[in-house]
Length: 224
Image 1 (cartoon, rainbow, N blue to C red):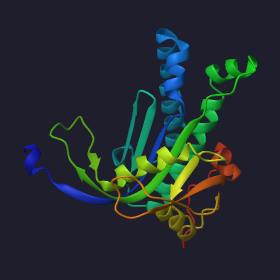
Image 2 (cartoon, helix red, strand yellow; image 1 turned 180 degrees about the vertical axis):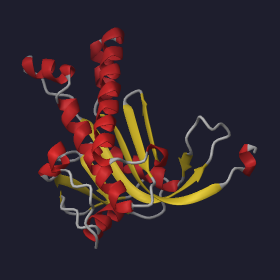
Image 3 (tube, rainbow, N blue to C red; image 1 turned 90 degrees about the vertical axis):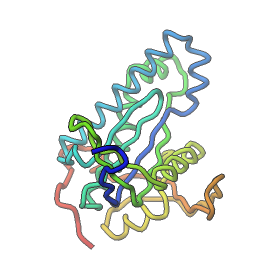
Image 4 (tube, one colour; image 1 turned 90 degrees about the horizontal axis):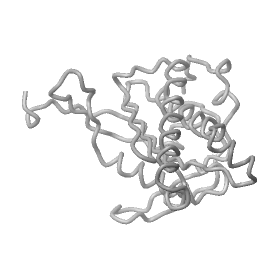
């Protein structure tokens, strides 16, 4: 089957983007070797967060794409259970944050009375197209406008004043639909370049303890 004839399947997905805030500043001040080690620790931390969340939520790896490149991580969850996808994305966000703050790089910075490195996170939900790859060894590759918008939401999150984790209005609606208790800020309206209509986003102010504690995770999602 050629790429032109690959079957395209539309799926509802939850998309998470994360990257290091002020990464360019670190690249300038750390030096080439130290910055490379800095990125390596960030990437290992993101994969560690993914591994822990996989073990807790039992998400199907064949219905989730997870990629880490440079100072950026991306997760696209497109299993049929949208509520579980959203819960998993929020748990992943909490582990990314908490594990990065506990990284050896940040522990050293705090010990030197320096500000810890933080990461920005944006979460959006929308339709994606999942096309199968030619090689069976490679997972499906999601594509679509929703992925682009999720990245825009993540870019805005670095301007937040609480957790620097932003969600789109579509995610806010799903939080209510699936009775997921997350404290969020008031509405922020942003006109992104290249996006026809203004986008409404909200900053996560606080996450319940069960997004941080392994023993508090409830695999049975509440239903509307």
